[in-house]
Image 1: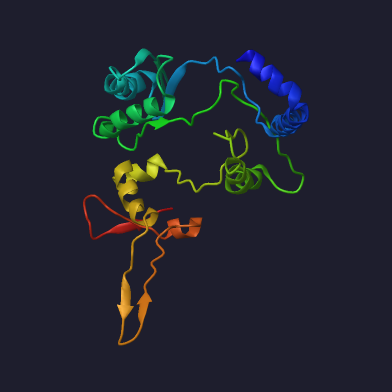
Image 2 (image 1 turned 60 degrees about the horizontal axis):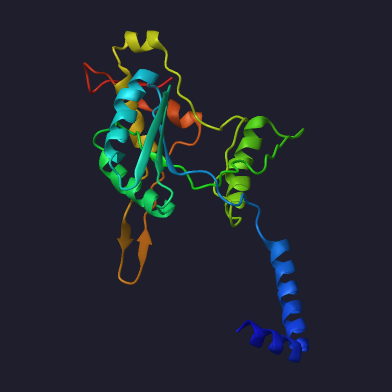
Length: 259
């Protein structure tokens, strides 16, 4: 077999040279267009679950969030190690699988087990599997600064424009943002005024819910046309919040403005 291959190569040496040239050109092209990554991948097959629990202390996070997540995913096929970290307002659970397992199948198994945890976790607390990334971790750090706009406008530019553009690049798994000021509307309550009108925090929250929800208005139809009714219920400026009326607990017919 080897002697036959050698005789063929000597007899058709121009064909062998041409094929070698094609392989060289293709290899050079792939070398310049290949992505950067660590090879071989030395990090273990693991799935990381992050759960935000605003307002909860580390002990409450451990009992109310971390423990139910660990109980739900323990026993998964191929699971070799389960580690967790509970800090104020955040739970991090790391599930490590054996090397022979498929990382995408592992993420699917974890996701299926997390779907049944909604009733066991505190309200508005949802576990999230972080995007799959390489062991090389952060590949690039970008800093933005401006002399014309403030930090809030700069952060809005990053959240609405820069992040979507970066995530659309093939191979980018996640983008983390630090710094700046997040644009938001805050309602700061006065405890003395709440005590004066005998109001609780839940009374203010219940009065705010209609202003934070979008409802469908349906449509109006005549003989040959249909008009869609659009209802704009979101509050977009402080003056709209100032017009909100909060019913008193002892008299539902009486109400006072939120100021």
